[in-house]
Amino acid sequence: PVLVVDFGAQYAQLIARRVREASVYSEIVPHSMPAEKILAKKPLAIILSGGPSSVYAEGAPRLDPALLEAGVPVLGLCYGFQSMAAALDGTVEPTGVREYGATRLEVIDGSSQLLEGQDLDQNVWMSHGDSVTAAPTGFDVVATSAGSPVAAFEDREKQLYGVQWHPEVGHSDRGQEVLENFLHRGAGLEPTWTTGNVIEEQVERIRAQVGEGTAICGLSGGVDSAVAAALVQRAIGDRLTCVYVDHGLMRQDESAQIEKAFGESTGGAKLVMVDAEEQFLTALAGVTDPEQKRKIIGREFIRAFEGAQADILREQGVVEGDRAEATAFLVQGTLYPDVVESGGGEGAANIKSHHNVGGLPEDLSFELVEPLRTLFKDEVRAVGSELGLPDEIVWRQPFPGPGLGIRIIGEVTKERLDILRRADAIARAELTAAGLDRDIWQCPVVLLADVRSVGVQGDGRTYGHPVVLRPVTSDDAMTADWAKVPYDVLSRISTRITNEVAEINRVTLDVTSKPPGTIEWE
Ligand code: XMP
Image (cartoon, rainbow, N blue to C red):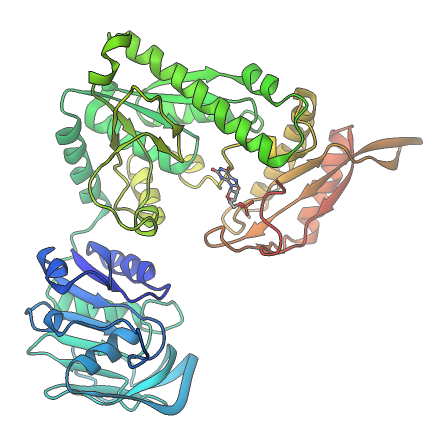
């Protein structure tokens, strides 16, 4: 792989994604990993990410010069660039000119490996206080800017390169070209990381791991579990059984749509639909506290999933007493960002609990199959499309596991769910018709079930419930802004909901960002 050494900025994942967009496989390693361990991974090239503050600050992460002497092509970005200069005999110092945001760059050497053919004058994204004021011996200075006497350098013989700016961000005019020049020309790497190759490789890996065994996959209806299941199905065919727990908290026709779309697109993978509506609604009766609702839904989900697992294993001839010996594989849609964020652990582990399926029964030892462990979300979508999953699954907006259970403020009952389902279906239909599905992250519709207000309809007084529209934009759900949905679309949604759902007589819009609000109301 190409290894991205993470110096602690938020840019490492973005760099890794950009490398993959250049059709080269990349992985992230922490800067704390010793150089010999990094080199033992046999990197084809190394990219040093941006990072915190000054390379001379106390406790600032250091670059081990061994990484620059191993004959591996290296590209340093921002802090990584400065740490290269500092690790060799260059000079890094505060020049008094801080550069933040869009900055004019002057390319000095148009024939440089990194910048060949680029405009001599361009905008790049900078974010630094210190600057490289003298390049190390043997390096050519190939670009400069007002605050960075040395804004880019290269030693083509040693295959060492660095730029002060952030080529990985979209605001840098020719950023992706810089990365591609480094990868394809500087390091001579072939663009082989393609969706087709990813699928082939994963299918082989799954076959090697599962052998003649059987696997179970919990489907949520979301893109990750669907793509993971489709990959495993391609690898082992009907030795995979998917389980979908319908907790009765899904949106209108949603479970049926998921069943249909999944069946068609995987050429009839085995799918067990567990109808658990009654089980969930009974457990939720009388409960109004949001955390309690979530806990109950999580608990009942595990029960339903366990029940289905036991049935499947029994069918396959795995008897109770032998459970611990049975090798069954559990497919999970874990993505690469989850792996990076949880410390980047390697290899498949035996687990007892996982946030996707909750705790598994104590006496069952499942081995995890995680075919998306190396992939970013956009790659998962590309794989899903290539495998023939329909757009409605590949581009499905996030929907919380507890479903409409956390979108009814107050007790969850079947009657209230049905009211919310009708209102939600209208909002979704209108947003889709307006072509907004990919512009907004998601749009929860929330029923304020214990609130009533007076209205008038026809000639009569009404005393109905309000719903809240919560359209948001977001990149990762960690932060969000309320989406500026055009008034005419909001107006159509409002008119239709109050006309078509008799119990609702007011439609309101949530104009709170996150923070301070969360996306969901509970
Ligand atoms: P909040 O409300 O925390 O939501 O701003 C952030 C994102 O996560 C989704 N969400 C969940 N997804 N299980 C899930 O799978 C959950 O329990 C859950 N709670 C919230 C929410 O829809 C939003 O996209």
